[in-house]
Image 1 (cartoon, chains in turn red, purple):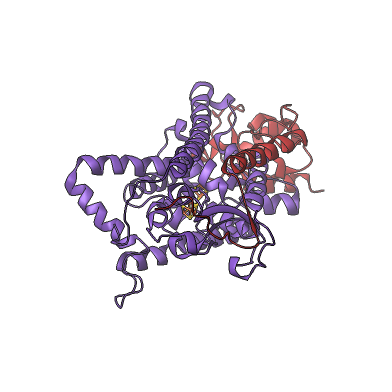
Image 2 (cartoon, chains in turn brown, yellow):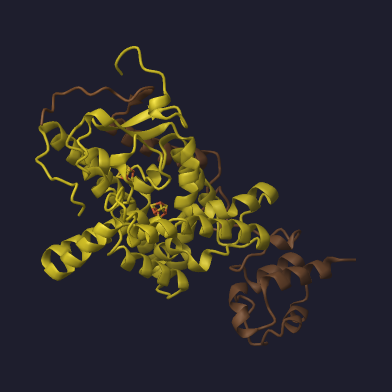
Length: 126
Length: 315
Ligand code: SF4
Ligand code: SF4
């Protein structure tokens, strides 16, 4: 086989060097991530803001409530009666208020994050 | 393998091209898998205090994109990092086609390694090697093509299943918009891979296991038949000006490119590889014994090589 034969090139296109292509891929992928990080579009935990500060409940919008938050943090932020919350969702009295919301479904079948959000909206209604 | 394949000693230039780029690709893949191992290890050591492993899944970015654009919020279990990763995949794809799949995706890499392990076993267990040869022959797009027999059963099944990933993508997009939650989360093998430290058996873990077991027989089985991210990438990749082109007059039709393609594309019969399954791994380019016959090229998307105006000078 004659390896020196020069075949006609495909028309209307330009050869890309393999190493340049590899460099392009890495630059595009990791460069975009870097730019996103600089622009604040980066957080790897729902518990931290993009600046690295701990997420705090504002008490203004129940949609902000996440499963990792505790009963205590919701009671404090939304100024609701803890006993009323326990009664509404049949949460056993011995459940500590430091329990994460996502763990409540096991001990209180009536409980779900969506139901809690709806209840908080009702409580806030005049 | 197909009878049209005639192994030959590659010329010096091809020998030079082969190891360099594929070694570099494997080096990049190894680095990304190393990062995944780091995330999993971090979860094992620091548990709750470590970053959520799911935060590094680019597909989570696609799932949460609608919610973020319409309501400014990410849906449960996704974070801004998912969006940033999806953005990085999208930018890479629009410029450099499906290079994410061929060079970066850890799930694709692990499937490649699984298949390489299978090839290693086949060399040591002759009956297994013979059975796998028969399967490869049945799946090889060059086998039985152009004859009265038409496509083999293996080719028909392979072709039918290749639409599966678009169905999965449609289900996820429809479900996520309708319910506002990650309908795919429980089945997601990336998530299962990234969350291995939790040591919990889930449907996603089973999907991951089945994908890897299937990859012992068909290279990159998950990528070929079920991956919704691969489906998204292949559709976006149509916008990319990068593609592989084959020069008919320089090609000896030895079929090595087709034989080595992990996605079962009949490279040796195409002028330009615009097949949506191509993952731009460049194995076909590196395997070709005729350096002039096939190359990665920059071209206007949608223009067929034969339809493009002839150049006035060489490139
Ligand atoms: S098809 Fe899916 S699993 Fe395969 S490499 Fe691409 S993104 Fe990864
Ligand atoms: S056509 Fe070439 S670059 Fe595309 S998947 Fe097959 S071997 Fe890889």
